[in-house]
Amino acid sequence: MTMQATPSLDLAELTLRRHCPLVTCGQSVLRGERLATASAPGAGDIHTPIAGVVTHVDAYRIRVEARGHDEVEPVDLAALSGKALYDKLLELGVDLPPADAVDTLIVNGVDAEQGVLTRASLLASTPEPLEHGLKTIHALYKPRLTTLAVLKGASIPDYDIQLTEIDHNYPAGLDPLVALAVTGIEAPDHTEVIGLETVYHLGRVMRTGLPVLETPVTVDGKLAIVPVGMPVSRVLGEAGIVPAEGDRIVLGGFLRGEAAALPTQGVDRSAVAVTLVRNPAPVAEDVACVGCGECVRRCPARLDPSMITSYAEFGLYDKAAQAHVEVCFECGLCGFFCLAHRPMLQYIRLAKSELARARSREEVAL
Ligand code: SF4
Ligand code: SF4
Image (cartoon, rainbow, N blue to C red):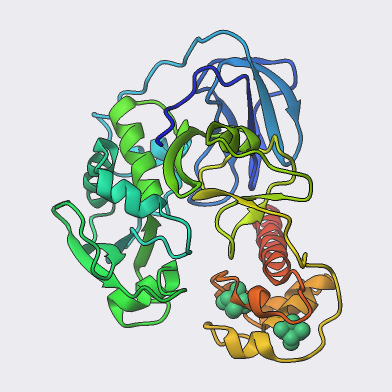
């Protein structure tokens, strides 16, 4: 099943991740109008996939209820190149790392997590935006090497780009390990890894002149192209899946995904899947670490997740930074193997986000 963009969406809820709202409650908006601007480098802005009225704005989300079908005018991107194109693409909602001094550009076409097949399905179906996106990204970054990382043995159509084969074993498909596989160096300089879904977004924007309004996700083992902001319960409903009491809807896969706060939470463009976890047991809780050391043995980044998460739990984010939390590539294995079922990845993401917030405050103060 490939769901097409749904113009009849009656509600869209856009998740803000370090974005500042540009609209207020009661404001009418056109389809494609910018709702929020990013406050982090390389993050794209956020736009509404439906025309309507803004009915809720807070620090975490903007909700739009559908009214009418009027749309913004497409932007003519053909005349733009270099920095002007890069800035316009960020404004149109494409997440792109800074384009300076990139020597090796890796497009990650590997679905690292079991059960997620978004990238493999996109590659196999050769959608036109993907071809467009691959050409544009090479022109934008002008790297010495552009390579497409694919699973070892995968049979994919010819995209006229050098391929690098990646091992099947989790977490080999995660960005830092893909960069290691391509360059032979841990955390190499002048190397950027960009997810295939971002290249898809880029290609769509280049082709239509409209902002990112749709995103590819895996739902029930199949690829679906859904409007950004489509409520997760509706995404599952379109696939014939009805959550029962106690089930969790997860944005992403089983190991690395984030539980949706509400069934109305919208799909954001970083979600590669919408997954239903039936009656999860045991549920991770804020319980004490029992010091078994299992997470330390399992961490592929050679960190001490027990210490990092304990620092995060008690708000000691500077200590988490000293324990190299930024090196964590969020594979989720420490949480998977934690004997006490502590919410390891959640603590790690909390520490990272608080450290990023502190950095932005310092930048503003300078
Ligand atoms: S998520 Fe846990 S196991 Fe994975 S790299 Fe980070 S600290 Fe290590
Ligand atoms: S696996 Fe869990 S309980 Fe064991 S040391 Fe790590 S955090 Fe503590």
